[in-house]
Image (cartoon, rainbow, N blue to C red; front, side, top):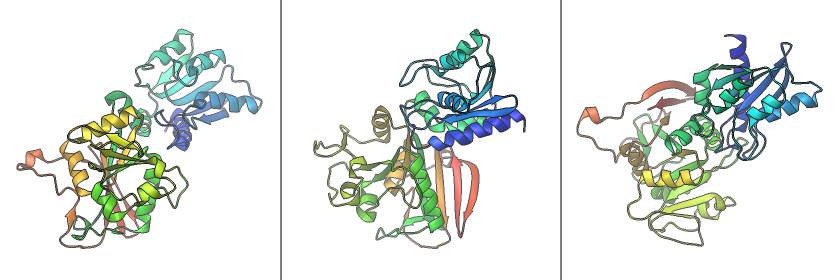
Length: 350
């Protein structure tokens, strides 16, 4: 690994500190080097607040360093437009930084190479593509959001070794162990929203909050076409009830309802969430909902948490997905597995 790559890894690590707080903006970290030493570090901490580059420059100045002639490393192309904050490319030019090392070009249409061009046009040396794959993985939510105009969608399935997610009486708490559930809490803290169906809400009465770790709670989306779910469910009555939204064919001004006309489809749901600036959705069930996302082919990856239990006949995650020919099967790409005490986590991408 080169020195530049090691520094870019540092930028990625800094950027991750903003996970869960900067959406729909990207995760960005920045490191400034002068005379072979780090003089400033920063990351985008919260949506609407200063960007990583500005924070890193400010950090260097607070320490008594001048950034003139320094090298700036950042995992995403500096912005060139005025949004919530002024352009970072202009700030870099103003501060007379001499070299900029970038992980990946920003695919957002308002930037998309314009920041790089602006820097180059003023004589700044620009190097692009350092750990590009890692930088793209870091901002997969943002990339999906700005290139396909929909949130990034992840399926989270907790099941027995024989593929059962709930018994026939709908009992499913808890199939997996504490180690698995802790990772689920981590995921919830990173995604904008968690989505479930009516049956899961009614049978499990879940919190869908972040516990056991520090992190912000996601928005909670529940599909209830006729608004028949009991109002005393935790989703509607706990201290986080204001973060619960109901997808329904009905209207109710007294509740947070996402109104959809006619048939409720995944495509319609995601379009609405995109318009609400939600750039990532963690789908937690149940079987009908999982099958619907599979049927419409509107998901990006999947976590399978598998417990070494045999539950026999019961509900399987994709019971509603029916095919007649094997060439219609959904092929996934295996990425990694992780042992979680006695459970196993399998992670796949489309």
